[in-house]
Length: 149
Image (cartoon, rainbow, N blue to C red; front, side, top):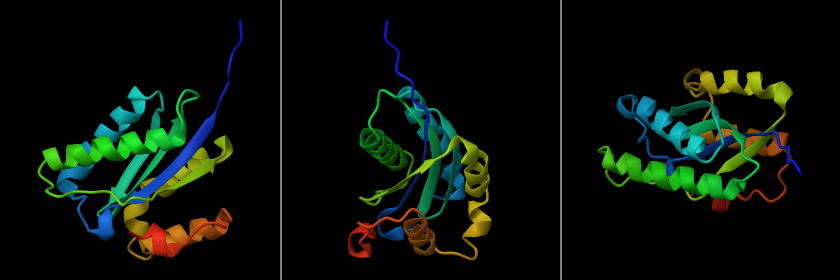
């Protein structure tokens, strides 16, 4: 009998449409829990989720049975619907996203980074953060004209 093994950790980041500050303190904990439930249903357990008003960070283990694009699509689609159903009228996520692989040796470091998002964004903008990732991960296909919708 064959066996497939997979251990891929993903740091997923995406913002609200137009960077509108729509993730309020009143809704963020429930949103995080809802997203964790979506990930769990796809066999992609969430390790950490945190947000600031205009974007969200998710660290999860990618299921060997799911494509990353499908996971992102479902998390964004279902959570956008949930936000609207919970009183955030006209809520939409940006079209793009950033997904970064994380070595199992760096999971704790990324978890701590996600935990500190509110402090981090007192000093750095979301755009600064993404552009740092682009440099660090050497993305050659990044085009700011299309990422920042």
